[in-house]
Every structure is written in C-alpha cells, then in structure tokens.
Length: 298
DNA sequence: AGCGGTCAAGTTGAT
DNA sequence: ATCAACTTGACCGCT
Image (cartoon, rainbow, N blue to C red; front, side, top):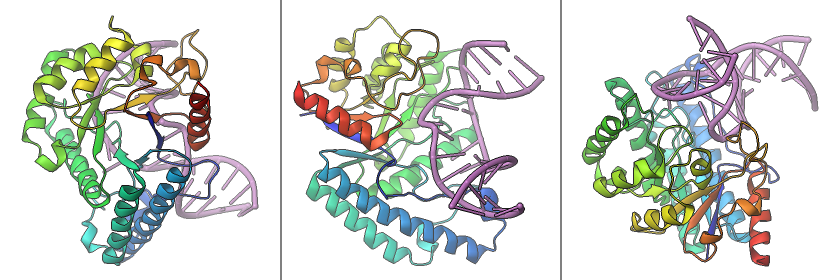
C-alpha cells in the first residue's frame, strides 16, 4: 500500500549521477562548456534509466531525481538551453525511454529543488532565480513524467503571514505546468504544518508532510491530524517524508539524518494508506530496503 | 590511486 | 559578526 521512495543516489549500486561546478565550466570555451555538460546530461539520463529498473526490481516505488540532473542549467553565466547541447536529441530520446519505463513499472518520479528556491522572498533577484529554477525542473519533469516538484516555504522574515502571502501571489502567477507539480513541505525551523495547512487550502497547493520535521518543530497538532489534513490537499497520491535522527531523540541535534530509519519512527497511522513516503536516510537504497523488509513483517 | 580544496544561489540560529 | 546546518557530496587537480 505504502510506496517507498529513494532519494537521489545509491551507495551500493554502480549507478552514478554526475555534476560539475560553474567555476570549472567557466574556464572552458563555450563549445567545450556545452560538450562537457552534454556528456554529464547523457550519463545522468542513462543513470536514471538504471535507477528506474533497480527501484522496480526492489519494490521501491518512487525515485527523487537530483536537482543537478542538468548541471548548472540556470546559472547566470554558464546556463544554457537544453536544445543547444550537442546530442540533445539523443539525450531526449533516452529521457523519453525513462518516462515510458517508469510508467510501465509504476515508478513515481519527483524533484526537490534545494534551499535557494524561495517563493516567499521579498528580493526580486532571488525570486527570479527561484522561478527560473522551478521552470528548469518543470522542463525535465515534462520529459520524464515527474509529477511532484517539492519545495520549502523559505524564510519567515519576521512575519510569516506576510511571507506566505508573497509566496501565494507568486504561485498564482506561475505557469500551469509548474504550479500543477508544486508541493510545499513543512520544515524544521520556521513553517509547521499548522502554518502551512491553511495556506495549502487557500492556494490549492498540496502539503508534503515531513513527520521528522514536525517532531523537531512541533505545533500542537498530532501526526494523525496532520496526516488526515495533508492527504486532503492532494489531488493525486500524497507524498510524505520520513527520516530518523542521527543521534537519537534525546539531546540537542535531532535534525541530522541517520543512516537508516528506525521503524519506531514510522507513523503507525501511515501503514495502510495509499501514499508515497520518501525515505531521507544516508544509507540510501539500503535504508529503503531495510524499511521495506521491516514493514512486510508487521 | 588517493587526498585536499572547492563548490551559484538564502535563511536561521548558535556562538 | 561569523559560521554551520540544511541534501551533503562529487568534482578537479595535485601528488
């Protein structure tokens, strides 16, 4: 019933996603830049195909694709159009094969852009970069068939209601292809489910419920209450997050992720639901496999 | 082959 | 005022 999701990479499998840095790319001429990036994009497309095959064979139902899948795509100096890469047509063919394979094997694909994507910011350049980044993620999503681009609500800036209103008005102006994939996640420092649930209803954006963050930053709502309310915000299969604290629940730093999931951290309320649960744990596929096996025994 | 320095971007909260 | 933490790697370039 529960579809477990693997995040971004493998620790035991020979499946590698490549990336580069803007500093390195800048040293090359434009043609060399595009050639280098093309090579990385091609390798990443092949790695995605292998990832889909692996997940399907191991009862892993979802794969979160790395944000650097097309490296430095939106960088102001070295960014590029996908179509301008040498061999773009060949790469796209492989990506369309990924889409077909994921559909045939029922592997859900998702994205989680990093912390620089901030729709609640008051700064116009930060906002522009954020929207560019979301549009890049959407461009890939449309090709490979990813249905979720999950982001955090960003900073509070001393006034969370105002920040959320800014984010809401930006969301209303996003292209439909972007907006229809967007979800917002409760974080461990600023925005709780209690903050976000009314926002999600008002702006028709689903809540990606991270139960670990909720435990780090409680808001008086129970796991059951948030689970039920979050499910109602989704018009497709809900997507939630699970992780366990590296150093246990006692002591200060509960935020850092453990290698594996402690089965006791997996909410009993989730056991029989039709939901995707992305596993955020450092042992990657090994942690998903262990959790799957433990859940089968229950 | 192994290792050290480096990497686009924002915000928060601990020191 | 500075810096680690957030997802922490993975990369290049030197030995």
